[in-house]
Length: 247
Image (cartoon, rainbow, N blue to C red; front, side):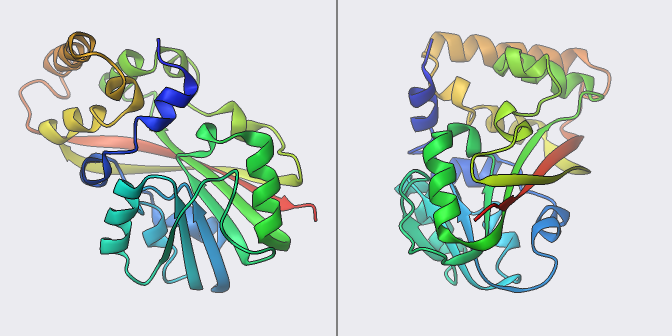
């Protein structure tokens, strides 16, 4: 079984695939943390800019820090106005008190929690805001939830949230949590290709990956909401956690 570091590193070379197949985020998630324009914001673990693109109209300067060059290349091509920098959450390449807010979309669980929180607090202005967010399966959607059990059996048996976000973080005070419901139109082919960009598929050997993909196909073929269809209406949940720096 792959360890945490192997799972985290599995994304390093899939920039174009991640951009094409992974879902974006609802604009309401950005509205929560930045309701009015600010001077500077950092999207940490920015990937290909799936959430970064919602920040460009909300700040004078937008920084994106991401350790994968393949993903950052996609972000730079898509969002040339963003100041994109190679780097990690445990050693953020920005000066002290550089930004008013930090966002982390779909990535905080990969960070070293203590080191990342210290770095985030350092680059934030006093009293600055941290927002953590995750997309996850809507448990009322039986076929998508069944597919999640194939890839993430432990997470799928919970409500889909992450323990990293549910607790108060060192150097930060928890302010609020909201859940945003939204829908995405997706083709069957893109839905299956999306799973191939998930860490458990990326680190699996060819035989295991083929078996898991066949399980997904069987689920789609069996469920009356997806059987025989080439396009689906996929319900999504985005959990947003907001913290304020204690400094």
